[in-house]
Image (cartoon, rainbow, N blue to C red):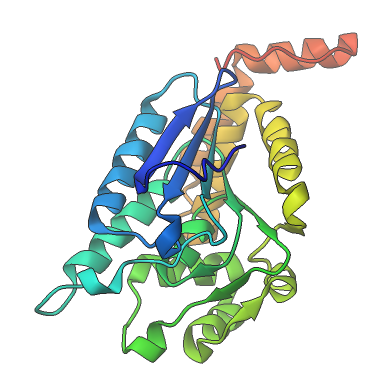
Length: 261
């Protein structure tokens, strides 16, 4: 996965490959990929495009340069109570979390501020040795938006969330791995290989089952558990062509060929 180091800086880029993998790349490396309002709007558009693409199987979120993202551009918080931009950021991250297909954050470097939540909204996070995370909201006098607080608590636990938000300290990669923020931490030279391995594993699953279980697991984690809704997804998979294909492939000891139906 190239980082396009010589490309012009600007809003995030969206690309699809022949296998149905979508890649969104943050593209302001000179400023550590800080996110401007136009970047958030572009991300929302990209997420809508990916969600509506029938052939899309996976989204990888990454960035150019030595850092993943420095979070929202604080100079754009604006006048007044400053609530408009945080809510725009919250809606953007919520749209990423709500994508029906699996998502992987390719963390090519350190992550700060709101970008920590952007990565946390992905299903998996693969980071590089030497990276760090810092959530400085308390040092800025900022009460973080509700969606981000909920994500931190539901995905990392209350203790880890309090540590990251209230202490506002820089946390190294090995500790991020220990508390569950990172799923893996590898050397920079191995990052693309691990992303490819996660992608291959996710793309090998039956799309209906993968999407259905992602939605159900996220609802359970948020406390939005609804048994009839989960039973509907269960029944959809039970009557699917993909299940018949999966069972036939298992019996024949061959790789399945799923259609997503």
